[in-house]
Every structure is written in structure tokens, then in C-alpha cells.
Image (tube, rainbow, N blue to C red):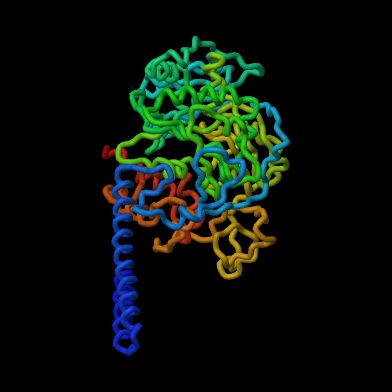
Length: 541
């Protein structure tokens, strides 16, 4: 409409100029302006055609090599962002939306300790869709080796969940209605591993690899989108995505994690390449001045994609959206670097190695550091003697999408970070009127306190209660996806399943909207709302 108005205005001006001009050149001026108007009309028609082409391409998941489905190249094709010099091959994506929350208490990369942990626990509640009471294979008091089966879902008995350590099964903790909350093992000082015969990756077919992984505890390493569930054995993903960097607050450095595990990581990639009908995609960090680990940059059998920008640039969901969005009934698998290493170690050694490098972070720690432990480590053992205050909150994961826990709790199945920060259960007098205390915020009304490199000692205070849910545009400013999250959340609240699907709910998981929740003026629990919507949609399929 604006282009039509411009064209008519130019034609009107040309008519006036023609009428007023008595010189011999008036005709030339008139026809020149008419020609310009014709060019603008053609340009408007081509722009409309380009937009329609993009809509249809997006509908069927078609993308070109340079993500441009226009009739003619756009301005971005002529003024592409400068990418780091160390990038050699692979696509480059510069994300302009997002926000980095800079908190005090990052783990010292030079400080890696082997922390003694006595108890380890695997929690069935970490897996969406599992029966509340899975079948526990062992009894309290039984000895167990690392890799022995602990339990399985009665609905899918072929998928086994294995012990990360050897020792004695000392407790099966129950929750509501006799549900199983935790299976706890008292670990040996020296690990004993169950050994198995490993199929040859190159000569074995897909079904052989799948059943081997399911029988030996590797299958739960895979997360399937949408819905974030352990996939069915007969599912063939259209793609597999692995993010090699994390941009969440105080997140661990995967370059450190993959060190000395390069061979296992590549072997894990080789296995995953046999399981998909599409490709294995690696999301690589293009934010720094130097290239990430060679284990990532020189990985074979994968497609590499470089991402630069603020958080959530490291989220695997962002990578999926910009490389190969989830469409229709597509299934996409995602894994973390440490899960790929565990898969690779099994195929290299015939043993279930669930070692984890965990970042202990937060301003309330005496010494933030990296520790070497195993999956499901007890939080009290990990943090023993390292907490300064009494009134603190322990988070298994990062502050945005992690889970609140206690010293008696256990590290979540996929977590590689523990964050300890001050509990925000106090009230700040006139805090809404005089925001004098330093706090991370997206609002320009909060002073920066030392500039962009200042690191905040934040607490958990939300500085207000739930309010009216109004359209503010805040979510769109921090989510680098072609999605309208505020409208999506309202569709979830109203139970409009068709609208939820149309607004792209299948492309999101909790960590993708965690920053939106942080920015939310209305104080809405967006992550729990999203999970509610995903569960509702899953029930309809």
C-alpha cells in the first residue's frame, strides 16, 4: 500500500510539473517520472512475488544454500556481516537479537578438580513422558557396576536406563502416589565397569546399532524434538543437531570438556551419522577471537554452522531454526557434547563411561571451579565446604532454565553446571521507584554500574508479582527466531491448539523462552506455560 501511494504521488507531481512547465524539456521530465513510476510498480510486484515465494518455501521447509529464496538478491546479500578469519567452510549466522546476562562467579578454567562424591542418583522425572513408576531391575542392597541396568519404562521396556557408577544400590526414593523420584547408588572408590561386545560401526546396519544403544543405556542420551522425549526405536530423524557451545549465564566451556576426548567425540558423531536420514549438524562458536577446539572445527561427517551473537546464540533450538526448521511431523534429535562423548566411549571401549565435567558457578561459592565427576552426582558432595552464605538457592543447571534443588538432591541427567546464588526472599523498599541496587536487566532505566563488562551478584528476587499479560514486544527483542512468542503464550493459555501449531510451538523448548521469561514485565512463567502447551499438543497426536 505504501508503494502504491508513493507511485501515485510521483505521478501526481509529474502531472503538476508538466502542466506548469512551458519549456521544451517539460515532456522529457514528464516521461522520465512516468518511467520511474513504472519501475517502482515492477519492483513492487517483484517484491510481492519474492514474499510469496518465501512463504511457500518456508511452508515446505525449502531453503537455498544462502537462505535466500527471493527473486532478486536483497541488500543483505551485498552487505553480508564480516565473519571471523578462522572460519573456513560452513555457514555463518550473525544473530542481532538476544542478551547476555553477566553474573559474577564464573568457574576458573584453570581449576579442574577430581571431587570425591559418595552418592549418585538417576531421576526418572528427568525424562518427559516416562511412567511415574518405572520397573526397577535391582533391589536395595544389590551390587551394581557402571553400565548395569537400573530401571526401564514399562511402556517401552526395550529402552534401558543404566547406572553411571559402580557400588551399592542404597535407596529407591518415592514421591507422590508411590512414584519413583530417585534411584540412589553409593559409589565405589574405584569404578568397576560392565563390559559388552560392541558392533562394528562401519559394517553394522542401523537396527543393530539402535538395539545395542537401547540395551546399554545410550539411547536416553538422545533428546527428540518436538516435546523433548527419548525417541522411539523406529523413529528416523530428519536431522541431528549438536551445539558445541553454551551462551547461558556462567555456562561451562565445551572446549575444556572435549579436551582429551577428541577420539570419543568423533566416534560418537560417526555413530549418529548412521541413525539419521539427513545430516548431523554442528553449531560452532564464532564469538571469540580464536577458533574453538579442533575436535569441533575438524570434525568429519558433519555439516558445520557458525553462530555469533548474544545468548541464546548457543541454544541448539536457535541453530535448528536457522539451519533446518522443524516442519509438520518432522523429528529432530539433539545431544550435548558430553553425551556424544559417552556414546563414543562405549563404542571405543565396550564400557558405559558417564564421566562428566561440571562447572560449579555462582557468586555464593568460595571457589567457582570445574570438577570431574559422574552423571547424577549428589549436589551436597559437589558443593561441600564451598558455599559462603546460608540463605542461598541451588540450581541444577543455569539460572535461566535450570531446576531448583537442595543439598540432598542430585545433578539432573543432562546438566553440566551447578549455580549457587543468593535467595531473593527479601523486599527492597521502593525498589520499583528507586532501583538503586545493581541488578541485571534489559531496561534502560537501570544504571549499568561499571559499563558493559560489569558482572552482577544477582539474587532470585523477581521484584514484583504476576501482572496483566499485555503485548509489549519484549520477547521478540531477545528471541532470534521468526516466531511471535507472546501470541504463542496467549494461544497456550486459551488452549487454541491450531493456533499454537501455527505460531511455531514445535520449534521451542524451555531453554529457548527462558530469556523471554527473564525479560517479562508481566512476570509470567513462560517455561512452564510452554511445557503445558507441548504436553497438550502431544496428547492430541
